Image 1: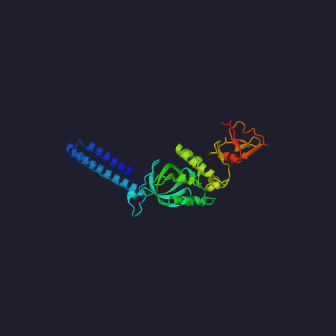
Image 2: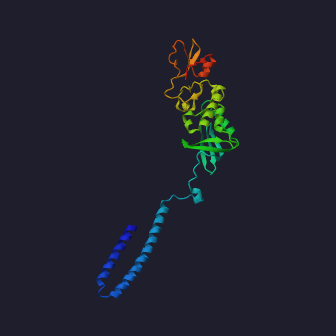
Image 3: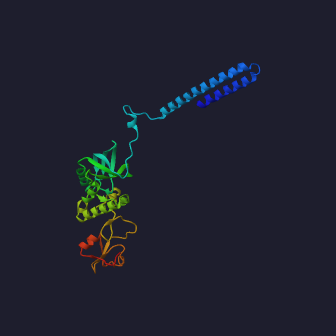
Length: 297
């Protein structure tokens, strides 16, 4: 529409210039006055046209913009401030979904769903799931907390470490109680200190048979979600590790020598089947009276 108006104005201006040039010789003074008057009209028309185009653009932008709900200020309608990454922000508990998921109101008033970082708790419908949920409610009974978020999202949930006002790590507390696993699949998002603390807490809970570790063969939450039952993998120090393609099996004992070996030992694959005894981990082998091999890396 704006382009058509400009084109018409250009044609009229061109016709006026031609008319003035043709009649200039007969009455220069009259046509000089006409030029001045035309200039005034040209400037006035330009100013008026500019205001018209500006008003037209404002109308188009207003039509394209989404309406702001009644009773909501433009400040409130703006996008919420993004969550700071790696530094504590205050939040208030509004609900607990399960052993590793909570609902909070963040420091800027935004409601958010938080996935506890570094852990994976039993699902609500699997053994120790209700206990994990109840323990998390107890730990957060005060309502106030600080979130240290990783910037990652898990099914729309912010992944954050939960700290009580006194600095106590709630995620670590869940592991210490035997009510969550150290989530080794994502341990690379943790600091080395956090990895060490979380792994040690799980080892302690497992050795003490706390919570889910009272079961000799607990099902990991990631297996439960997929209807699977995969083996647990351990290193030579009986620390649970993430299973990889290079992991070749559990601890093997020699019934004749009462010595056990683990993947990587030189005689791990040499023990004859008639003397071979399989153990889930080094702790089980030692409980059965076996000692570790001395020639292993």
